Structures are given as structure tokens and as C-alpha cells.
Image (cartoon, rainbow, N blue to C red; front, side, top):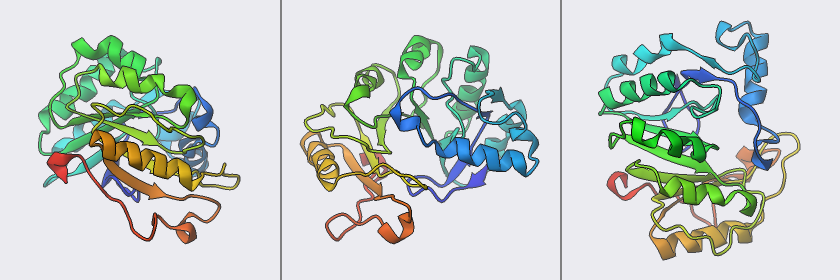
Length: 238
């Protein structure tokens, strides 16, 4: 567990590390860059680098030790539904989340098709939110797949937003996070793309969260949209 600077969560929990790229949004993967740094620092958990998917059973005990109620981003350094993660380990992670109902677990995947394959084998307690990444219209099929699972809260991460999603159907999507790419060579995000998503959220009743403009200096660019910040959360957590 680690305190997180990510605006829409409080903690990160990584029972899996390592991943592989599946779409354009992965091009400048933050987790890949961070894994290289942690590997260079000699952290055992990252000794195999980013391309090797590893499970870490010792981390499964961590949520039982947390006090109070936390908002937890699950696998910021991987994808729980990567094909190299064994089904039994995914079930172990779900058991931990099922047992710790005081915490909200935010699971974000680029592989909602595998979620659907395992949907009926998993126990979807109400504290498990499931999201998928949608960076441009080429991967909007992920939204339809997301809608079909049994998670009580379904969300989209449109970060990095690298293309227009005008007119996208957000029915049964509870929450939409939008953000521009950051780093050394970020791809630009147009304001009109952000406003298109905001308009669709208003039409379908989805909570809208604007995370950042991004760029080479994301702190300087800030996260205001038309002079204000948007930190909306799903209704039951608003």
C-alpha cells in the first residue's frame, strides 16, 4: 500500500506488477517508466522489470491492516485482468476485497473482455468499482463490454485522452475521469474533446472528474476547466 497523489483515489495497492501494451493509450505508460526506476533502486518487487507479469501473494494481507475507510486504486502498476494473471489469483484478490467492505476498491483494466469471461466466477461486492480505459474512439468497444459485468459502479478513465469521443453513449456508466497525457513527449489534448465528454456526462447522468490538462509541466497546466475544477464522484459517494 502507498499513499497516492492521483487525484481520484487515496491509496494504491499492487498485488500484481508488470503488463504489456494493447492500444495507443499505452504508448507512454507511466507504470512502465516507474517500474524502471524502482528496478534501478533495487526493489525486489520490480526486479523483473515491467514486461514480466508477477503476482505478489504477500500483499494480499495488507487491506486487513488498514484503518478507517479508504479509496484504493488496485494495480496502478499492472492490470489485474492481464492474461498472464492466473484466475485463482484474481479470485484471491476478489476475496480480499469482499472481506474488506469498509474500503472502496477501484479496479481499472484495458481488458474488459477478460472481465466478462470471469464475471460469473467472481463475487462483486458493492465496494468493488470496475473501470476501463478509453483514450479515443478506436477502443470504444470497451465501454459496451464494461456495461455487461456485475460491478455496482462502472467508470471510464479517458486518460490520456488523445482523440474525440463526441456523441459516445455513457448509459449505465457512473463515472468518467478525463485527463491529458503528461511526460516528456505528451500527445496534445484539445479542450473541445473534454467539453464533448462533459456534455455527454450531463446527458446520461454520469459523474464528471477532470484530472489534468497534462503536458510537459502538468502542475503548471493545472486542472481547471473554464475556471473551475470538476471533482464529481458517483452518486453514492458524492
